Image (cartoon, rainbow, N blue to C red):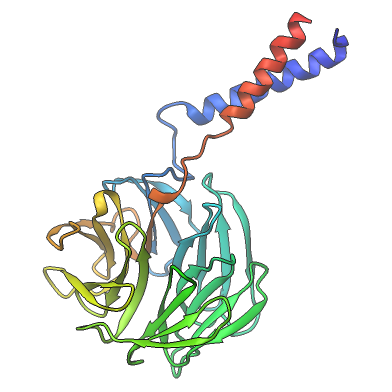
Length: 318
């Protein structure tokens, strides 16, 4: 038999938690502050890049994950399914979000080590590798621990793109830096270079586990797909020279890329161009893009609510 005071406390907790979960799960929520596993997360903004928008699989705008992260640039998911985003300029920050939209980690540096950041990828260790394309020289790619501690630097020059491949391989490329440099991201040891046919200057890169290949956003109107050994596979070409910023693989293996004309470009996996969808009204210009298809869909506390409900029933029956 539970004391009356305990029954009252458990009853109140159950009611509050069930009510909260009901609000979260009710259809037609006023705004989307988080994401599910069929959404795109796209950085952008009007004037300054300062927002992270949440878009459905068909690029229908759902709401803002973030609306005040000045110069937001590269984004990636960590092993826990959190979104990691870096901002450049004077902000020099990394922010980590869970699927509800809450900020659960990150750091800010008061020096120039983050520089004018462009691309970001999470390493198997949990560290962040950031392309720091400082204008007027550049400073290669830099690795930081999750608390912001500097770990090491890779390559030099105006680096704009990094990608982490299976086997702890790190690809580093950029603007006029020649072949893509390859490193062991666990040790920092250089492993040589790869030269992908038709690729010169690069804006960003991302490894796709679905195809075991690397998507390379080049300067201009092309995304180039390469094997993990650097062999050319195919080109995804936009109808005009729109200036592609970032690229990801999305539903059905299709390829999606942000462009300077405030659109997201879409191709089928075989390279056939599908459409350009405007982000102007919701986001303005677009920069980084990732798809949450590999991230488990949030359960919004349903299991916890059920557990409390069962305890509540037990208390009442006792």
